Image 1 (cartoon, rainbow, N blue to C red):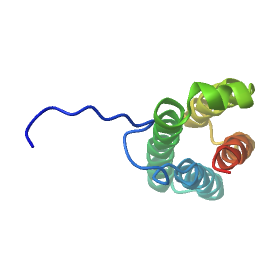
Image 2 (cartoon, helix red, strand yellow):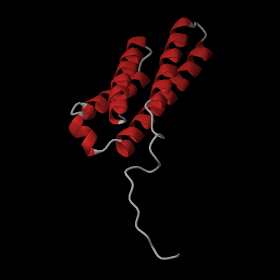
Image 3 (tube, rainbow, N blue to C red):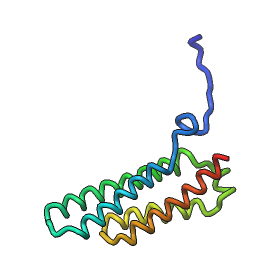
Image 4 (cartoon, rainbow, N blue to C red):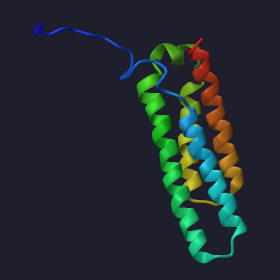
Length: 125
C-alpha cells in the first residue's frame, strides 16, 4: 500500500480544466478598460483604467502560457503547425496592449486568442 507507484499523465490536472476562455475574458477586460480610458476626462479614473488594463494584459499572458506549456503537446503542434506562431503573436500583442490604449490592439489580441481557441477545440475532438 505504501510502495511507490508510477503514474503518467499528459497534464497537471484532468482534461477539461484548460480553456482559452480565461484568456479571452481577460482580453475583453483589456478592451473595456481602453474604451473607458478613451471616453473619460477624469485623470484619476484614467490612471485606474490603465492599472487594471495592465494587470489584465498580464493575466492574458499568464493564461496563454498555461495553455501553451501545460496543455498543448508535440502532437498538437504537429497537427497544427501554426500553433507556436499563434501563441507568439498573442502574447506579444498582450504585451503591446500594456503600452497603449488603442482599442485596435485589443481587437487584434481578441482575434489572435480566437485562433488559439479554434485550435484548442480541434484538439478536443
